[in-house]
Length: 458
Image 1 (cartoon, rainbow, N blue to C red):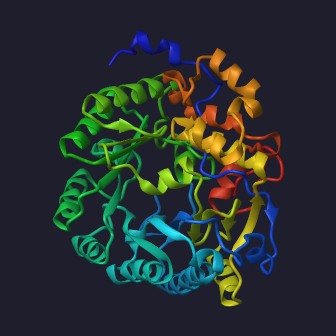
Image 2: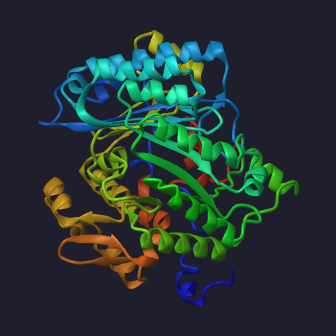
C-alpha cells in the first residue's frame, strides 16, 4: 500500500518515535533500606478518605521467552515458582494488613507478566484468592488476567472465571503466521483463534488482545488484516504496539546478524498506526490512550485509576512497579533477592522516589497525557493551580508545534500529538527525572538504572 501523502505532516516531529510509554513517575532513583520502606511509604497511617486504588501482581514466568520481550521474565522452573508463590502471598499480606492498605478499597486487580498463564489453574486461582482474602476488593471490581495463547487453556480460564476474574487480555501479537515465524512466536494463528473461542466458552464477556505492528517485512495490508480480524472476532479491547527492538533482546541480536529482517521505516510505522486508528474508530472503538482502543464501557479500569486519576497502585512480584501514598517504587527483579527480603518480613522494594507536590504535578501531566488529556478540574482540584501556571512555557511550545490543544476544560494531545504521544508525555518530566533509554529498560527488569548514558545493557 502506497504511503498516504495526507499523513506526511505527521512525520519527522521528533528525531525518533519513542516506543516506550510513560509507565511510572517520578522515576525511582534512590535505593531504600529494607527496614525503612514501610515508613517511607506511610503504611503505618491511614490513607485519604475513601481511598480507591488498584492492585497489580507481576508473574515473571514464561513457558518460553519471547525474543522481543524487554520485561522481567524467566523460563518456568518449578522450584522458583514455589518460592515465588510463597513470597508474593507474603508481600500481599504485608501491604493489605497495614493501616494504609487495610483501609484502602481496591477497584481493579491485574495479573500481568511475564505470563500468568504459565502457572497452573490452581496457582492462578490461589493468587487471586490471596488478593481477595487480604484486600478490600469491591464487588464490582474489574479483575483481569494476561495470558499467552500457548499456555492459556479452557480449564485455566474456567477456573479463574469461577473465582471472580471478569476480564482476560491475550497476547495475540499477530494472526499472520509469516509474521509469527519472524518473531519465533510460541503459537500459530490456529491457536490464536482457538484460545479466543475458549475465552468466550469460559464465560468471559470482556476480552482484550495485544497486536503489534511494523514487524519485520510486514506490509500495510498484512497489518490491517490483523486489525480487521480482531474487529470481525468482536474483540472488546485492542492495544496496538509498535515493535520495540531493545538492545539486550534476542530479537536485536538476530536482526543485527541478519537472521531476521529489520523493522520498517518510521514513516511506515506512522502510516500503520494512523490507518489502524482510522479503521478501529470507523468500527466504533474509542481511543482512550496513546495505544488503547476499546468498545464503549470496556476500558481497562486499572489504567484509568492509575494514569488518569493518579490513584494508588499496590504492586506485587519481582520488578513490579507501584505508586502508594505518592511513593513510586520498583521491586527487586531477582527472584531470590525478592524472596529473601520477604522471608525477613521486609517489603522487597529496592528503589523508590517520593513525589512532592511539584513532582506529582509533573507526573499528572506526563501520565495523564498518555491517556490523551488532562482535565483542568482534576488538576486544580488536586493541586490548586491551573496547568499553565506551572508548565506554561512547555504547554505554549507544544501548542505552537501542533502537538497539544487547550480549551477551558482540558489540555489534550492533538491528532499529531497522539501519534508522537510517548515523546510528548516525556516533555513534562522534570529535569531531575530525565532518563536514558537504557535506564528505562533496566528499571523494567528490576535492575539499577544505568549510571551513565550509553552504559552497556547486560
